[in-house]
Length: 327
Ligand code: SF4
Image (cartoon, rainbow, N blue to C red; front, side, top):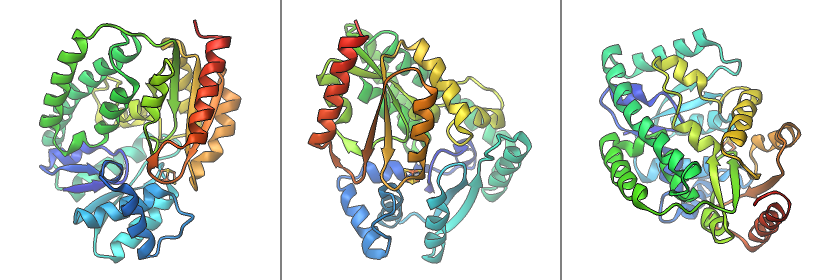
């Protein structure tokens, strides 16, 4: 079991015969994610560190993960410190870096380094890529059933796409689950939402956000970063696939993708989720300046149910969109 701190070329890990587990998913999917945060704080993590970092730390020890790939470039500067703490505590850490400028030769070098670290043969990696590509195509269908046909909820869309960072550690089992889901979802009646929303930013730490949005007659029909995890590009070359992944590179690349999806998915408004103590909060002003739709910025700190104040703000936003633009 190899822990990953965010999306990396998991084709290498599966090609080498290992299982990838996204530490974020282990954290937020735990029955008691708040306890994992507390455990990290008891171990010495400062209060003013993002809860995802502390939750990942807690998850590594709860699941006794011996080795992780830490993304030290293109994701989160806090991961660098987290990796050093974990290494000091006996966890084997393999660094992986995305180049901010999207330099293909640099990324190719990083992928080769990863292959060497796991003794992954190129042929096996390509075999893994073909298997995962088939699953990625099915995830595109889940996404289309969300925004084109109104048969999949925003929460279901989020859950399937976010799980594609590690394929739940079991690509075969994950594919079977998607197949069953698609069979059932295709038979559902279409129920298009009155207000169509996009969700930008890192996956949210709240529980109940998507369900609350649906209760207002709105739906998230675009999960920006989760969709990026699913790599819906149909790209045959492994390195180029990870160059098309917008999240680790300059914000302009993300903005171009968001603009395209606003049109394609006929969105009425955007929710930008930001995490307390996250440097990515700074991007909020650039996103607002660059996008033509109304943006509601939310901030979450620790795992738990959606709070009343945030719920009120969402309700007002959806009402406003319903009055001003949505049919
Ligand atoms: S939310 Fe921000 S600070 Fe927290 S792990 Fe993600 S990128 Fe890092």
